[in-house]
Amino acid sequence: MRWPAALLRLLDMGKQAERVVPPTGHTAWLTSFTAGAMTFLCVFALALSLASGRLADRWSDALARTATIRLSAPPDQMQLQTDAILLLLSTTPGIESAKALSDDEARALLEPWFGPDLPIEALPIPRLIEIIEADPGYDGAGLRQRLAAEAPGAVLDDHTRWRRPLAEAAGRLRLLGWLAIGLIGFTMAAMITLAANASLAANAQVVRVLRLIGARDSYIARAFVRRFTLRALSGSVVGAICGAIGVALLPSADAAGGFLTGLGFTGAGWLWPLVLPPLAAVVAFAATRRAAFQKLRELP
Image 1 (cartoon, rainbow, N blue to C red):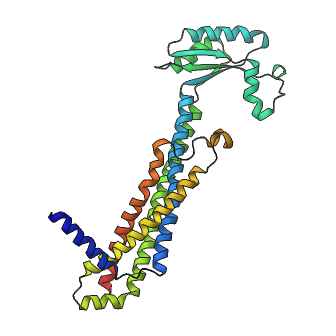
Image 2: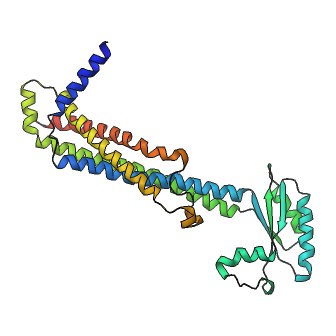
Image 3: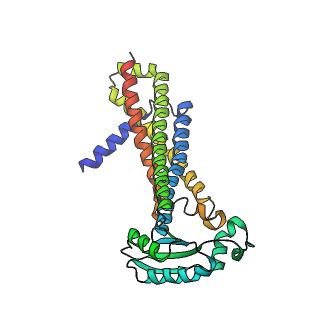
């Protein structure tokens, strides 16, 4: 029975101490607006960071199990060397399947760049052979040597040059996202610190009177910490809701195209915006507490 009574007394003391801080004024809307705006931006930075990782992972996974053989040969030797390569691949450990792309499939690959009327038959386009890798995979160096013996014009492309830039870009985008989140948190802490300092300076006379009647600095600081923490929490909740709505309104994969597929939150990722308001409250608590005690030491 003692713990509930003690907690009620503590809350009552916090409410009484909170009366020291004026409920209105420029510091009130500045704190709420800053927390809301920073949380709104943080939602988008978090969505970009998570989505870039998912997008690159999906692309990398799709490319990791595929490879392509480009065969350049005289027209009278093209089909003969294609058959020889397919026979070689069928006996190569680590290859699940292999097939030569037809002219229609090659035309479909080139259609986005050259249009649907590209005369494939009249152009010296190499024959493409698609390879699906098994688990475990094949020996790339050994396969290149066998291809050089069977078909000198065949070149194996295991998509390494495509996967590496994707992985690097994803890592940098993810890092930039987390750096942006850290910068947003630092900016919010700085703005709330300025607001708390301004409020303390504006109520310097009240602080002096409270000290004269025996109030301790911890009691006075509690008033500012509580009020500014609640302001930041309420503003952050609004910012998180607006940010989540903005992310939900991003174009869908069907409307925006394949490049934008996966941008935003998916599944349990929608819970991430709910984490931001408590974090904003923690940042406001720490910033206000530090600013309050520092300012109280400066006041006579």
